[in-house]
Length: 299
Image (cartoon, rainbow, N blue to C red; front, side, top):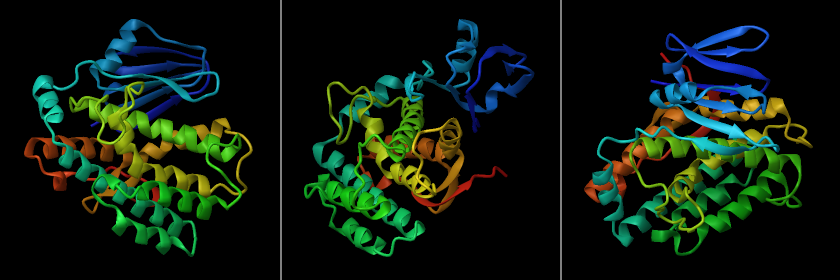
């Protein structure tokens, strides 16, 4: 099972030799292709051939390429996908509105619980105020509790004067971290043959990743917790911070009470949604619970 996230931040030449990705810089480093789950290219001076791209695709590797602002602007997904795509698509497209609303209810509820846990871990005494909102999430989140909880969450975590979307370093950290996690969710959903444009709640015609944005929601507090731990808050998104944010994919979350890396948790979530669609049962959906950010160790 692939588990490694590789970030290329300096000029390099990449090639594949004998099942290894060779990274040529001042010195050469070789990594087994089968270990690489995500390859993040930040430097504009990275050279690789179509043959190398093909080998990465054959090994189900997610390729992320960053733009001038160092945020991911391209996600290269393996084309092979699922072996029974048409069947999976029919299952997903055949789900009822009540099913989708109940799935969204579970997603929002878990997001709110994760926000409360994030606040608790960050030392905010009013974390229970947010936790209490989880019980008010109705089918389809008709009461828009997600928005209420988000406002309270950010205000308690970063202070009343802070606002999401501002030009400060914290917002840069959140934007970058969410983008990396979103790419991991996209990879997992695509690998399970799910239609990314067909979301449960997100439904923009301009968004090719509506479904990924649904399942990204419970994971966002992991990035929030990382950002809250930066003392003092950064003025800019540095190279070191970008690398640490990519490494978040290797941090642990709980799924069904068991510890998994965030990257593997995305795969479990995608598989559970596929099962939920097949059996028309939203209770089969498995969602990640966050706790203190700790690197996952594979036994």
